[in-house]
Image (cartoon, rainbow, N blue to C red; front, side, top):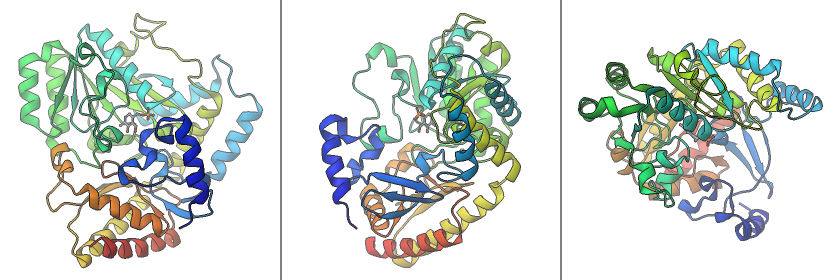
Length: 428
Ligand code: PLP
């Protein structure tokens, strides 16, 4: 694989940007390589500046459920740009998008559009604190909710990959109101709620975890969260930044039939642009300015180009209902990975739901952060490189989700399957 141009760009980038990147997971540092610099994307493929082609199973870390440069999304965006790129004043499209989101997520009785998942979770927690008048929050080990100070505690994703789940630069006082509990541990959760439920403003959870790799909730886990938070007057926040419009049109809450008090969306809802949303019960959202005393704002919030891309993406998902087919393809692929691993004598556990999955290099089930951490991350890194060399781009870290899009067709998938078989043999 040639990478002269990427290497030269990486040199220049490292002189100016920490790690040469604008988000740590892009650095490939954990796997000791040079990241490829992208020239363009189309469908399920990415091309780098050296002319290499990759079947892309990262999908920009989740947003691209329709693949790169979907023609309908591109056409809508082109049209939108011609009408101006930002107004700082309301538009009809924002209302239409808000209505669409509300229909897909009926628990979001009112909502706000923001620019990133980090902003969505931060704002949801502020509203929950403002509404309850309480300070403490509960999060779960290995869940990642963006990079707000009080949420970077035992965090997953890049924070786990780079061994800094508790970031420097966060004053002790800021994180002391964050209680961290093991994912899927109903007993620990109930005990905490019994002991201090009345001091807790919010419980925030990835209803299906994607940031310690994919970890599914035990069936009773989410219902225990719902029951206990209701009992103690705590705001239950589902962080569906990954799962919203991904595991089902209505997200994990539709899949499991559980109604949270608040929901955070990002990634898919922006159709590949910086757009996210938070919302929930009317009485909580009515605390947000200008209706109430909780302040939250944004110069580019509800940006017309981002709204156009998000709206078009959601309209396509609603119209085409690609979910059963994309799940079938994902299952087929994970079966091939299982078989390839078995044939190569490499122990793996694959956690999969809908069009997201993670291949963990371990022989033990992965049900929480502790079990995810027992995977052989070195072997994962070798697997990643072996795939990349063969034209297949998987997430560079064990603690991330692998995604399919509607653009992953038979041709791309059989190409990937062959690469996977060879990669498994190479790392055996
Ligand atoms: N919440 C979850 C579940 C995420 O996976 C992420 C990002 O990966 C975020 C929040 C933060 O979103 P953003 O990177 O857009 O700030």
